[in-house]
Length: 242
Image (cartoon, rainbow, N blue to C red; front, side, top):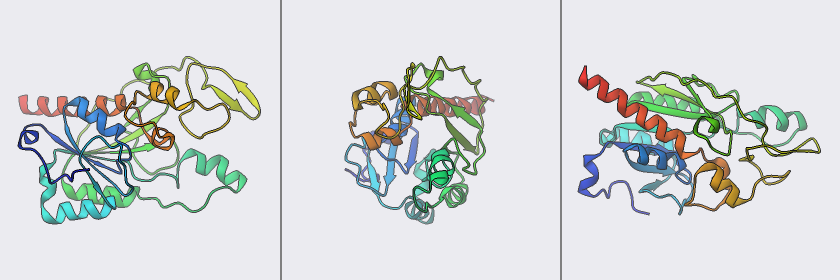
């Protein structure tokens, strides 16, 4: 993968988003569709990531960009720091059954650095006890998708009217406590209990550039970040017009 410093001249004409903890690029894809050029950063090798990507620690990389002034190349930053410490599965089922280990919560140190950038940003987390403001909550039913996948977003340095939550049409398909339930949504997590096939996950999430289950189950549908990206760009145009 090329590094974010190797940027063709024509890319500078569009607003640029920094995609931290980028995984396979589902959020980044949405921001691209909204009108951004996207650069990623992830500590793991992500060959399916569809944009220039720096491989390394996101906090170290962000600190480097701030120190060198390279952060000024960006208009917007998106971050999805590891959330296993406070996610619903960890604080619920896993803790009650003694499963799992110790997880690191990187939300606060990520926010501290994001505030130092002086740029508008979004921090994304799943439902759970992660200590973020829930300025936005999006789910798949808002976009007619085959998943629920609730996600919360803290907005830093900008705001948007919070959309109303859309009632769900039924259950998530799969087994619960030994009983199978059918429904219009598939479960975008795990690998057992009636979970969807990889093609079903791809179709439900709107993702077609990776077929790795782990990347799909960690992703948000690109429709979420496309909505956020368009809302941000619209807010900036309104500010300029005013």
